[in-house]
Amino acid sequence: MVKHIILWQLKDELQGSEKISVKAEIKTGLEGLAGQIPGLLEIKVNCDGLSSSNADLMLDSTFTDFDALKAYALHPAHVAVADSAVKPYTKTRLCLDFEV
Image 1 (cartoon, rainbow, N blue to C red):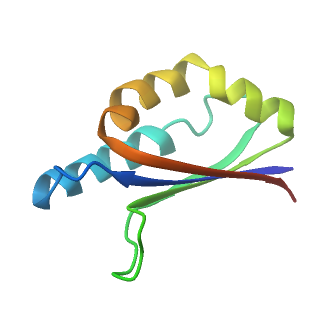
Image 2: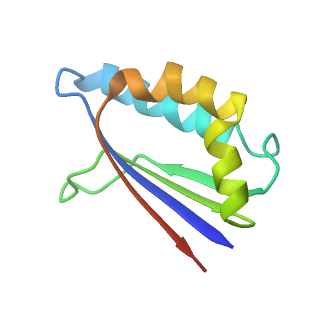
């Protein structure tokens, strides 16, 4: 199996209720991919970090293998969520992929 972990910082201009709304939209969109993409075993977005955090959201996903992860990156359902709900609102993105 392969883990795919993403940390995002949202754009600085997002504050208060708008920031909360964006986080919820990202969570709903990405977690909604469960069952739609072959090889995607688990997907969860955490947007309730402690005040000591320097990231706003974390994606924790698990795939059957590296080929499934590569296919996920190009899958139209994933691309649609990334392009509409994630990329317009994020400032930075860090990724860690590893085998388990």
